Image (tube, rainbow, N blue to C red):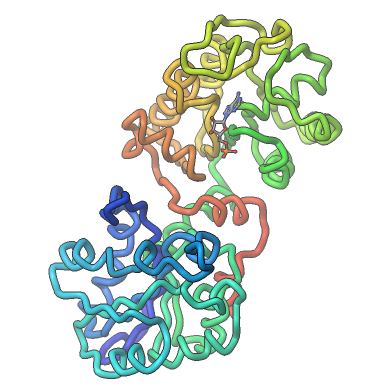
Length: 400
Ligand code: AMP
């Protein structure tokens, strides 16, 4: 992020998509905090910052008359917190492009910060409209993108706008740079053995990721709901566990690739099974391939936790995406917690560990171990796409 910021106006795309309560109060300001170093650097180097972000999905959650719910989705709600974190006033304008935004941007002085209105109030944003992007570009001299969470979308403010700035006038921000470096570290020349831990509900959501990792990792641990599709495909009895019957062949082909590539694919030997999908269900431990009818696997079992922990603590590079069970319910959170502890222990022993994807981060925070891994990614969908090897439009636009 070495652009000549001095005396320049910088259009900075951030991800301020923070959760708000019904009184429009911020309940978790992590994303705002994550952008502060980039904002501060531009200000310290004599630039002025024009902040651009989305908040929620105003186009999808409209008022009954079909109009945008501006009161709910306005970025104005963020001004006090942002101003407090930056220790300086933050100006706000209730439009993104247009005469008021242009006038405010034009009169901005070095060291000043202007927050534009929610970029998704304009229909052109999610459509990647070129004219809207051009109007955004006109507001500033330089463009910096620090919104890794939306890097997989070809929206006007994330990708298209970058096309209006030549090389030397655009850059990734510090957060985005770190995200790309850390995800890149896992994919190119990782210290081996490299172990990928993939969990969560469905095989179909993470198919491309599984197919890539099976050829690349030394060990692939598959837990969570998706494990039962693999176990059933091998002839196991999985009871009422989550299974995607249309993915049994896919699971078999991943298992076949694992054999061909000499990748160790670890499935949970046993499971915590429940007679209902409920926090107070009756539970017991059973082999994952011998689950009685009517019972469902909702967490990895005690033997699986030990097997997985051993594989993890022997590794030098670890990638973790997705919980090992229904961690939202305490009765089925122990498997995910055990994995969090193993990843933290491996990290203490010198491994590089990257945890990403919304639910894995939530699970890691639940165990209080989020400071004990090497890197926690802020990008859910964007990280998955990057790891799958799918080009990210925001990254490509920066390099064009
Ligand atoms: P994902 O968004 O694909 O990472 O999936 C996360 C979700 O998968 C969480 O809400 C978990 O509750 C759910 N999940 C994990 N394991 C299981 C399981 N064995 N059965 C049903 N759902 C599960």
